[in-house]
Length: 119
Image 1 (cartoon, one colour):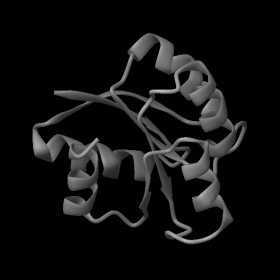
Image 2 (cartoon, one colour):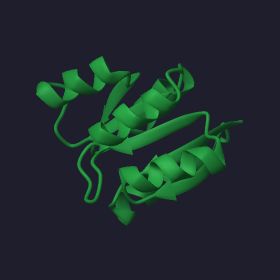
Image 3 (cartoon, one colour):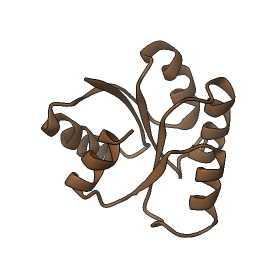
Image 4 (tube, rainbow, N blue to C red):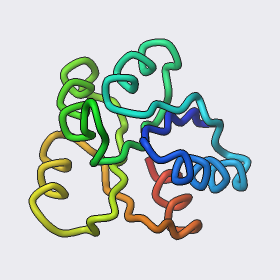
């Protein structure tokens, strides 16, 4: 079972993602961080296999956190979550920094599960 750290400032979005992961029986939620700074700390303690991280959050946004996480662990599997869609500068920047892919909100359950299974 893959452990997933969910990083999103929206409790509703985090719960929706948790439900999707739980529905598969293949993923375990290792924890929930409300911003990038919390995610960096929690990665050390929860040791997730995957991190699903929102791009836009207070305190520390997802791209800033991604830079730090990849410097700490270049093999980390980070999936960015955004409502911005799959185009634009932020999407390209996330991939350049080491994100494995980007998942769009609102979530497509099968799409999310298939994406995470492939990592």
